Length: 444
Image 1 (cartoon, helix red, strand yellow):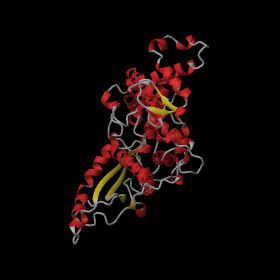
Image 2 (cartoon, one colour):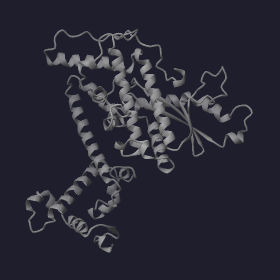
Image 3 (cartoon, one colour):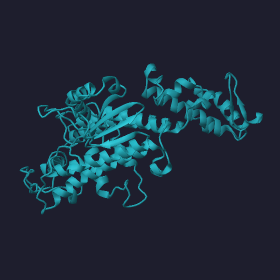
Image 4 (cartoon, one colour):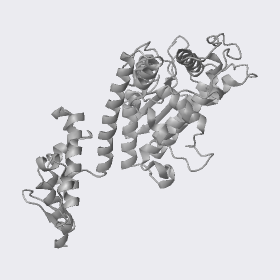
């Protein structure tokens, strides 16, 4: 086994490796930047068979290191354990410490590349905005709300059966691309000018001629506005939005049970039982569960429409976070009544369990609110410690327990967006009487 221990000059540590690997790393550390800057591969001689390996390794290392410093120039930010550039601090940027890279380092490097490409896209979009090209302000607004925050999780779903829970048909992909990047939809997915049922909304008049670029751009804008209305605010789709909310509730119930949470219940009728008929702020949460001596009071909400107005760039998840703040406020009195306990309870017994309210807020495009994201990370951590993480609890293509549930949420929201459009395209559909407010499954 001693022959597989790697010792590098200047590094006070030993790592298991084949001797050839140690030689390549040591040789790579001797390659200076001047050599790399002067087209090194043209000067590699056949006398050293390892030259291609160690020069290529040093060049790749320098590229990744430069990318890390460029994307995260602040030293304090790089020192954070979860930062994609944290490995630079761990290794000191020295290739001889390459063995100190964290597990699955390729994922961290991929995150750096993604962040770099995202910056390139944003700069291109800003250039389009400055040029005032038709349709680009709308595309920028769409991308600005979905550029991070898990909105793109839907594109990672890999269904292996057509009727599976992760299956997305072509319409789901196309509508998701419209929502995230304002890609043009095919005519079959564009709603008619007038909404069916009782909705009074009327789209723009159809243009008589589409033989110019400006006319075509205007037509696409009109179609996009109609699609936005149908998905975000058309009253005929109140029932669709409610059903999406309820299915997300079901996903979270499965997730919590799989992660080891106990006494997981939907619509717990004993919550806020101390409220009287005079209490207008009586609340019944979507989910109540327990873990580690804490009772979690969970209420789920989806921001289908945006309250941000016509802005170009804003914090990702702004609408979801606003909905979460509203939920916190609406539950203040109910949580206080729960803390006080009902008549006849012993306060010392009631205080043995701590209540924590968690608003799970999402946006229509799939973005998670900050509270939902934080709680999800906690649940996944609990699953790693005490959960029953059997293989059948998550799809094989997701690679991790948490990835599976993130993709389930994304697919469910994607299907809901398409269902809104399909309802609007049905000429015989007259709307429904189900309100757009969140409704418990047992009350539908």
